[in-house]
Image (cartoon, rainbow, N blue to C red; front, side, top):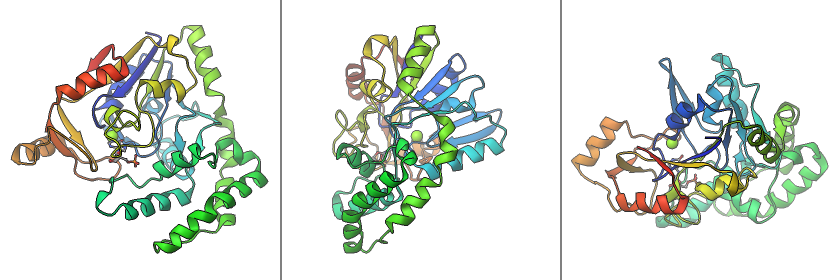
Amino acid sequence: MPAVIVLGAQWGDEGKGKATDQLGQHTDLVVKFNGGNNAGHTVVIDGEKYALHLLPAGILSEGVTPIIGNGVVVDLDVLFEELEDITSRGVDCSRLLISSNAHIIPPYNRLMDQANERARGNNLIGTTGRGIGPTYADKMNRIGLRIQDLFHPEELRAKVEAALAPKNTIFEAVDLQVLDPAEVSDHLLSFAERVKPMLCDVSLVVNDALDRGDTVLFEGGQATMLDIDHGTYPFVTSSNPTAGGALTGSGVGPTRIDRVVGVAKAYTTRVGEGPFPTELDNEVGEALRTKGGEFGVTTGRPRRTGWFDAVVMRYATRINGLTDICL
Ligand code: IMP
Ligand code: MG
């Protein structure tokens, strides 16, 4: 099974980290293709618990090359915090590769996430507050910062200034802290030399690996029902966690994919606001939450719980062209 996409078939937290990690034992490359540190993968190895947000789950498997694709948004502070944490616990992270086309989550987009949620009033999405939506918005709006911009300091400074000016006006209006563009740029530029050795052309690396016959696992963050196009819009994340996102988020063509594995739980959970047809707002739901330990890895929020939704499963099968279900 040379190229396998592993993705969430419900609203997230289906156990993709565990599934990826188990498959990762027989994998050469693990490529994260969407989202950022809004994710929360819990992996337990030899009794030791790892909660990963940004790093691909494959980072814990020896001999696997973990890769952050161009479709991911990278908070550089979080990247190095996670790397330091797991390196100090004896995990070798030297194989990590990152696309130089991946976008950076600048500190002002965490604030923008808060400002947007405040502006929504009663219609809030319940985002993870990590700046994910505003960073993808900047990308689409063509005012985003890519990791490669760190090597052109003057251009980066100009981009930060241009992107931040209108946002500062909003921060002022909603009583959030106004940020200094020079400070933001200095902070981002301080990561340049450390991140440099990890950068590569992910599309080239992955396609070369497939040509060699290596096994590549594409690891989706979030899930089908949180997809910006196919999920419960607007109560979704701002990327494509579905099979198509694996292609655009890493630079691989559809003809190269062998299997698409949808991970699902035997019941359903959802974090944040939005529709949830099989939700159990009663003692049964409470029992699922308690027994399943259904609290967010990223935000600690209690997850909403409900019955297995076969309609959602059929939908996820169609949208992703699933070949396998991991229940
Ligand atoms: P954002 O991704 O932070 O913009 O949040 C948008 C919506 O997606 C919110 O309802 C979040 O709770 C949800 N969400 C984002 N990432 C995850 C995840 O990894 N698991 C479950 N829900 C998530
Ligand atoms: Mg999770």
